[in-house]
Image (cartoon, rainbow, N blue to C red; front, side, top):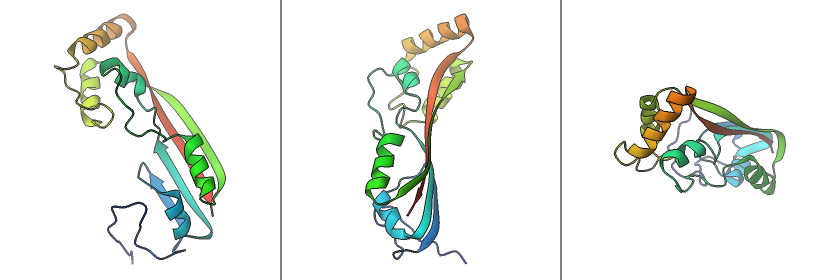
Length: 156
């Protein structure tokens, strides 16, 4: 009974106006104006997203001056986009939490799988920075960074 449709454009979702009472999104692309179109009156959109500052301190440790892959992904700017589209913000939140590595090898694996945050990362390219991380682990027992998440619950 699910009407599944392929969509690769978050600004042009192939459903009629006012099709949904609730839309959920976790870490996916979205367009506030398109969501407003899709929701019925009183409908809700709930999202939890990775913020623009996610792992930035770790990125800077190994790839200094790397541009943010998703600038503007923060509560303040996204809240404004939803309000401009006509939504009422029912709930909001933003969190910066620690992420810790106790082993350089674990960090290398992490940096490899999140290639959009660590573009062109390689052990060879970042070797000297990884040695610095290893010294930090030997001295303090860990390397610590910061994750960034935000939540928006918006009502049409």
